Structures are given as C-alpha cells and as structure tokens.
Length: 124
Image 1 (cartoon, rainbow, N blue to C red):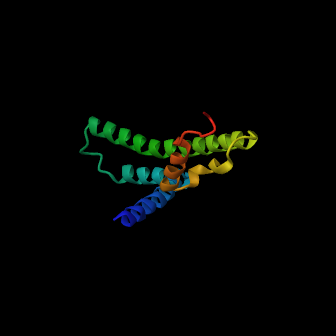
Image 2: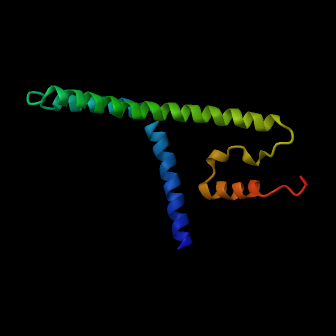
Image 3: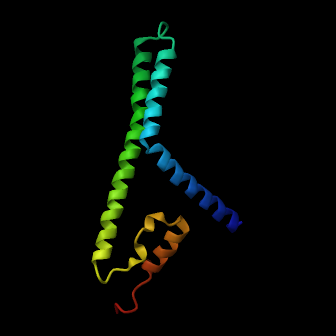
C-alpha cells in the first residue's frame, strides 16, 4: 500500500513540474489568447444580453490572468531560489545539502525536514 502511495506521489510530482512549465510558458499564453479570439469570433452574439457579454469578457480576462500569474510566479520563485542558493554558498558554516532543494521530491524534502527538526546535540 505504501509503495502504491509513493508511486502515485512521485507521478503527481512529475506531473505538477511539467504542468508548471507548460502553464508558465509564453507559447501557452499566446495559444490561450488565440483560443479566446477564436471563441469570441465564433460565438453567436445576436442573442446575448449585455450581462452575457460582460461575463464573457470577465471570463476571458480571468483565463488569461491565470497564465500571466503562473509565469510571474515561476520567475519570482526561480529568482528567490537563486538568491537563497547564493546566500548558502556565501556562508562558510552553511550546509550545502539544501542547495537546489526545490528540485527534490516531496519525500526527500520531508526526510530532510526531519533531520533539521532534530535538536542539536552540540547546542546544549
């Protein structure tokens, strides 16, 4: 049972990494804009009320904002990781085991978290 869970967890992590790359790419945003233009051009506007028009515009803007926010979040996250990695490398007493920790799986991060949660034996 645990191996099936770990397999599904690993599969989901790989899927989420791929999804982040796809949803944060400029090409995906361009495809989304083209899709909305295509949708708006093909929809029958003759029977629509003003509220329906506003709803469609809000839906389109919200849909496009998802891709913009994801791209910005990906860029900001990468910048934050680079800054943190630089700080860890610059400090001579820092443990370099945490460099690029964002690329590790959830299980590996949980294991490392357990290691850092243990009280220091030397700190007494």
